[in-house]
Length: 294
Image (cartoon, rainbow, N blue to C red; front, side, top):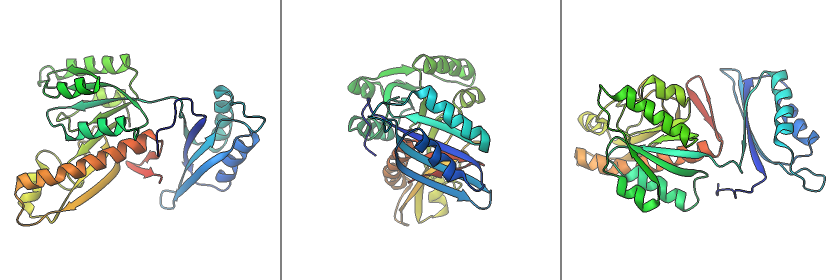
Protein backbone atom coordinates (compact mmCIF):
# COMPACT_ATOMS: atom_id res chain seq x y z
CA UNK A 1 0.00 0.00 0.00
CA UNK A 2 1.39 3.46 -0.86
CA UNK A 3 2.33 5.63 2.09
CA UNK A 4 -0.71 7.70 3.14
CA UNK A 5 -0.23 11.48 3.27
CA UNK A 6 0.37 12.92 6.72
CA UNK A 7 -2.97 14.72 6.57
CA UNK A 8 -4.81 11.49 5.77
CA UNK A 9 -8.28 10.94 7.26
CA UNK A 10 -8.13 7.13 7.07
CA UNK A 11 -7.68 4.74 9.99
CA UNK A 12 -7.27 1.02 10.66
CA UNK A 13 -9.01 -0.96 13.39
CA UNK A 14 -7.64 -4.37 14.40
CA UNK A 15 -9.70 -6.60 16.69
CA UNK A 16 -9.42 -10.12 18.11
CA UNK A 17 -11.60 -12.07 20.52
CA UNK A 18 -13.28 -15.39 21.12
CA UNK A 19 -15.48 -16.26 18.17
CA UNK A 20 -19.23 -15.77 18.56
CA UNK A 21 -22.16 -14.72 16.37
CA UNK A 22 -22.70 -11.04 15.60
CA UNK A 23 -19.13 -9.76 15.72
CA UNK A 24 -18.94 -8.50 12.12
CA UNK A 25 -22.34 -6.88 12.43
CA UNK A 26 -21.45 -5.19 15.72
CA UNK A 27 -18.35 -3.53 14.28
CA UNK A 28 -19.91 -2.48 11.00
CA UNK A 29 -22.98 -1.10 12.78
CA UNK A 30 -20.69 0.83 15.15
CA UNK A 31 -18.98 2.65 12.29
CA UNK A 32 -22.27 3.16 10.45
CA UNK A 33 -23.81 4.74 13.53
CA UNK A 34 -20.89 7.18 13.69
CA UNK A 35 -21.41 8.13 10.03
CA UNK A 36 -18.08 6.61 8.93
CA UNK A 37 -17.47 4.85 5.63
CA UNK A 38 -15.75 1.45 5.61
CA UNK A 39 -13.13 1.34 2.86
CA UNK A 40 -11.97 -2.24 3.32
CA UNK A 41 -12.74 -5.09 5.72
CA UNK A 42 -11.24 -8.52 6.14
CA UNK A 43 -11.77 -11.15 8.80
CA UNK A 44 -10.51 -14.58 9.78
CA UNK A 45 -11.79 -17.23 12.16
CA UNK A 46 -9.44 -19.83 13.61
CA UNK A 47 -11.83 -22.76 14.00
CA UNK A 48 -9.33 -24.70 16.13
CA UNK A 49 -8.61 -21.91 18.61
CA UNK A 50 -12.17 -20.54 18.21
CA UNK A 51 -10.77 -17.05 17.75
CA UNK A 52 -12.05 -14.20 15.58
CA UNK A 53 -9.84 -11.58 13.92
CA UNK A 54 -10.78 -8.56 11.82
CA UNK A 55 -9.08 -5.64 10.11
CA UNK A 56 -11.20 -2.66 9.06
CA UNK A 57 -9.98 0.39 7.18
CA UNK A 58 -12.34 3.34 7.23
CA UNK A 59 -12.60 7.07 6.64
CA UNK A 60 -12.61 9.35 9.67
CA UNK A 61 -14.65 11.93 7.76
CA UNK A 62 -18.31 11.63 8.67
CA UNK A 63 -21.19 11.71 6.24
CA UNK A 64 -22.49 15.05 7.52
CA UNK A 65 -20.46 17.19 5.20
CA UNK A 66 -17.01 15.74 5.69
CA UNK A 67 -16.13 16.79 9.25
CA UNK A 68 -13.52 14.50 10.83
CA UNK A 69 -14.67 12.60 13.89
CA UNK A 70 -13.01 13.42 17.20
CA UNK A 71 -10.47 10.73 18.14
CA UNK A 72 -11.67 10.46 21.75
CA UNK A 73 -15.28 10.09 20.61
CA UNK A 74 -14.23 7.33 18.21
CA UNK A 75 -12.16 5.49 20.82
CA UNK A 76 -14.96 5.71 23.36
CA UNK A 77 -17.45 4.18 20.94
CA UNK A 78 -15.06 1.39 19.99
CA UNK A 79 -14.30 0.67 23.63
CA UNK A 80 -17.99 0.30 24.43
CA UNK A 81 -18.46 -2.40 21.78
CA UNK A 82 -15.11 -4.02 22.55
CA UNK A 83 -15.94 -4.34 26.24
CA UNK A 84 -19.29 -5.90 25.41
CA UNK A 85 -17.66 -8.63 23.31
CA UNK A 86 -14.38 -8.85 25.30
CA UNK A 87 -12.33 -7.75 22.28
CA UNK A 88 -8.69 -6.77 22.19
CA UNK A 89 -8.29 -3.89 19.79
CA UNK A 90 -5.90 -1.31 18.41
CA UNK A 91 -6.71 1.80 16.41
CA UNK A 92 -4.15 3.27 13.98
CA UNK A 93 -4.69 6.68 12.43
CA UNK A 94 -2.70 7.14 9.22
CA UNK A 95 -1.92 10.73 10.13
CA UNK A 96 0.05 9.42 13.15
CA UNK A 97 3.30 8.41 11.45
CA UNK A 98 5.13 5.60 13.32
CA UNK A 99 8.74 6.19 14.38
CA UNK A 100 11.06 3.31 13.47
CA UNK A 101 14.61 2.58 14.65
CA UNK A 102 16.92 0.13 12.88
CA UNK A 103 19.48 -1.96 14.77
CA UNK A 104 22.50 -3.18 12.76
CA UNK A 105 25.94 -4.69 13.25
CA UNK A 106 28.31 -4.88 10.26
CA UNK A 107 26.12 -6.31 7.46
CA UNK A 108 24.48 -3.66 5.32
CA UNK A 109 22.14 -5.29 2.75
CA UNK A 110 18.97 -5.25 4.86
CA UNK A 111 19.72 -1.73 6.11
CA UNK A 112 20.14 -0.37 2.58
CA UNK A 113 16.97 -2.08 1.42
CA UNK A 114 14.84 -0.59 4.22
CA UNK A 115 16.26 2.89 3.74
CA UNK A 116 15.76 2.84 -0.03
CA UNK A 117 12.20 1.54 0.31
CA UNK A 118 11.49 4.25 2.86
CA UNK A 119 12.92 6.91 0.56
CA UNK A 120 10.70 5.68 -2.29
CA UNK A 121 7.59 5.91 -0.09
CA UNK A 122 6.99 2.17 0.40
CA UNK A 123 7.21 2.26 4.21
CA UNK A 124 4.72 4.35 6.20
CA UNK A 125 7.05 5.60 8.94
CA UNK A 126 9.84 7.98 9.87
CA UNK A 127 13.33 6.56 10.49
CA UNK A 128 15.13 9.00 12.79
CA UNK A 129 17.62 6.57 14.34
CA UNK A 130 20.04 3.74 13.57
CA UNK A 131 21.66 1.91 16.50
CA UNK A 132 24.67 -0.38 16.24
CA UNK A 133 27.26 -2.20 18.28
CA UNK A 134 29.89 -1.28 15.66
CA UNK A 135 30.80 1.98 13.86
CA UNK A 136 31.13 0.35 10.41
CA UNK A 137 27.80 1.42 8.89
CA UNK A 138 27.81 5.04 10.03
CA UNK A 139 28.58 6.34 6.50
CA UNK A 140 25.25 4.86 5.34
CA UNK A 141 23.39 6.74 8.07
CA UNK A 142 25.16 9.95 7.06
CA UNK A 143 24.20 9.35 3.43
CA UNK A 144 20.52 9.21 4.43
CA UNK A 145 20.72 11.96 7.07
CA UNK A 146 19.88 9.67 9.99
CA UNK A 147 21.29 9.81 13.52
CA UNK A 148 23.69 6.89 14.13
CA UNK A 149 24.54 5.77 17.66
CA UNK A 150 27.13 3.17 18.62
CA UNK A 151 26.87 1.07 21.78
CA UNK A 152 29.72 -1.47 21.91
CA UNK A 153 28.50 -4.55 23.76
CA UNK A 154 30.37 -7.17 25.73
CA UNK A 155 29.04 -9.72 28.18
CA UNK A 156 29.99 -7.41 31.02
CA UNK A 157 28.49 -4.21 29.55
CA UNK A 158 25.37 -5.64 27.87
CA UNK A 159 22.84 -4.75 30.60
CA UNK A 160 24.06 -1.17 31.00
CA UNK A 161 24.29 -0.57 27.26
CA UNK A 162 20.79 -1.89 26.67
CA UNK A 163 19.47 0.45 29.37
CA UNK A 164 21.07 3.33 27.51
CA UNK A 165 19.58 2.12 24.23
CA UNK A 166 16.10 1.91 25.77
CA UNK A 167 16.43 5.45 27.10
CA UNK A 168 17.47 6.62 23.62
CA UNK A 169 14.56 4.84 21.96
CA UNK A 170 12.13 6.46 24.39
CA UNK A 171 13.74 9.86 23.75
CA UNK A 172 13.05 9.40 20.04
CA UNK A 173 9.53 8.09 20.78
CA UNK A 174 10.24 4.94 18.80
CA UNK A 175 7.25 2.73 17.99
CA UNK A 176 9.02 -0.11 16.16
CA UNK A 177 12.52 -1.58 16.36
CA UNK A 178 13.83 -3.54 13.36
CA UNK A 179 16.83 -5.83 13.77
CA UNK A 180 18.35 -5.67 10.29
CA UNK A 181 21.00 -8.36 10.86
CA UNK A 182 21.79 -7.05 14.33
CA UNK A 183 23.96 -9.86 15.65
CA UNK A 184 23.08 -9.58 19.32
CA UNK A 185 20.61 -11.52 21.47
CA UNK A 186 18.28 -9.06 23.15
CA UNK A 187 17.75 -9.36 26.90
CA UNK A 188 14.49 -9.41 28.81
CA UNK A 189 14.62 -5.70 29.56
CA UNK A 190 14.65 -4.80 25.85
CA UNK A 191 11.96 -7.33 24.93
CA UNK A 192 9.75 -6.06 27.77
CA UNK A 193 10.23 -2.44 26.69
CA UNK A 194 8.91 -3.18 23.16
CA UNK A 195 6.65 -6.26 23.32
CA UNK A 196 5.74 -7.46 19.82
CA UNK A 197 7.32 -4.28 18.48
CA UNK A 198 10.74 -5.71 17.63
CA UNK A 199 11.05 -7.43 14.25
CA UNK A 200 14.06 -9.66 13.58
CA UNK A 201 15.27 -11.22 10.34
CA UNK A 202 16.75 -14.70 10.72
CA UNK A 203 18.68 -16.11 7.79
CA UNK A 204 16.99 -19.50 7.65
CA UNK A 205 13.53 -20.97 7.12
CA UNK A 206 12.60 -21.40 10.79
CA UNK A 207 12.28 -23.64 12.69
CA UNK A 208 15.14 -25.16 10.68
CA UNK A 209 18.69 -24.07 11.50
CA UNK A 210 18.16 -21.88 14.53
CA UNK A 211 21.04 -20.05 16.18
CA UNK A 212 24.38 -19.13 14.65
CA UNK A 213 25.68 -19.76 11.11
CA UNK A 214 22.46 -21.18 9.63
CA UNK A 215 23.84 -21.12 6.08
CA UNK A 216 26.72 -23.31 7.15
CA UNK A 217 24.25 -25.60 8.91
CA UNK A 218 22.20 -25.75 5.71
CA UNK A 219 25.27 -26.56 3.65
CA UNK A 220 26.15 -29.34 6.05
CA UNK A 221 22.71 -30.90 5.58
CA UNK A 222 22.79 -30.55 1.79
CA UNK A 223 19.44 -28.80 1.62
CA UNK A 224 17.97 -27.82 -1.75
CA UNK A 225 16.27 -24.66 -0.52
CA UNK A 226 17.39 -21.99 1.90
CA UNK A 227 15.20 -19.28 3.29
CA UNK A 228 14.70 -16.36 5.61
CA UNK A 229 12.20 -15.67 8.39
CA UNK A 230 10.98 -12.37 9.79
CA UNK A 231 9.50 -12.72 13.26
CA UNK A 232 8.79 -10.77 16.41
CA UNK A 233 11.62 -11.05 18.91
CA UNK A 234 10.84 -12.81 22.17
CA UNK A 235 12.91 -14.24 25.02
CA UNK A 236 12.96 -17.60 23.22
CA UNK A 237 15.70 -17.23 20.60
CA UNK A 238 14.40 -17.49 17.02
CA UNK A 239 11.00 -18.74 18.25
CA UNK A 240 8.90 -15.57 18.19
CA UNK A 241 5.67 -15.26 16.15
CA UNK A 242 6.51 -15.57 12.44
CA UNK A 243 5.35 -12.74 10.17
CA UNK A 244 6.83 -13.74 6.79
CA UNK A 245 9.06 -16.40 5.19
CA UNK A 246 10.42 -17.19 1.75
CA UNK A 247 12.91 -19.53 0.10
CA UNK A 248 15.32 -19.75 -2.82
CA UNK A 249 16.61 -22.89 -4.52
CA UNK A 250 20.24 -23.99 -4.09
CA UNK A 251 22.16 -26.98 -5.41
CA UNK A 252 25.02 -29.32 -4.59
CA UNK A 253 27.32 -26.98 -6.52
CA UNK A 254 26.79 -24.11 -4.06
CA UNK A 255 29.40 -23.40 -1.41
CA UNK A 256 28.57 -21.79 1.95
CA UNK A 257 29.57 -18.44 0.40
CA UNK A 258 27.10 -19.03 -2.42
CA UNK A 259 24.35 -19.74 0.11
CA UNK A 260 25.14 -16.51 1.94
CA UNK A 261 25.04 -14.56 -1.34
CA UNK A 262 21.75 -16.09 -2.47
CA UNK A 263 20.24 -15.73 0.96
CA UNK A 264 20.78 -11.99 1.08
CA UNK A 265 18.13 -11.36 -1.56
CA UNK A 266 15.58 -13.40 0.38
CA UNK A 267 16.46 -11.70 3.66
CA UNK A 268 15.88 -8.27 2.13
CA UNK A 269 12.46 -9.03 0.69
CA UNK A 270 11.19 -11.00 3.68
CA UNK A 271 12.19 -8.31 6.16
CA UNK A 272 10.77 -5.45 4.10
CA UNK A 273 7.43 -7.25 3.70
CA UNK A 274 7.17 -7.92 7.42
CA UNK A 275 8.02 -4.33 8.33
CA UNK A 276 5.57 -2.95 5.78
CA UNK A 277 2.76 -5.21 7.01
CA UNK A 278 3.37 -4.24 10.63
CA UNK A 279 3.37 -0.54 9.78
CA UNK A 280 0.16 -0.95 7.76
CA UNK A 281 -1.61 -2.62 10.67
CA UNK A 282 -1.98 -5.99 8.96
CA UNK A 283 -0.57 -8.24 11.70
CA UNK A 284 -2.33 -9.72 14.73
CA UNK A 285 -0.47 -11.96 17.20
CA UNK A 286 -1.96 -14.85 19.15
CA UNK A 287 -0.67 -18.14 20.59
CA UNK A 288 2.85 -17.39 19.30
CA UNK A 289 1.43 -17.17 15.77
CA UNK A 290 0.25 -14.35 13.55
CA UNK A 291 -2.68 -13.51 11.35
CA UNK A 292 -1.40 -11.39 8.44
CA UNK A 293 -4.19 -9.77 6.43
CA UNK A 294 -3.70 -9.29 2.68
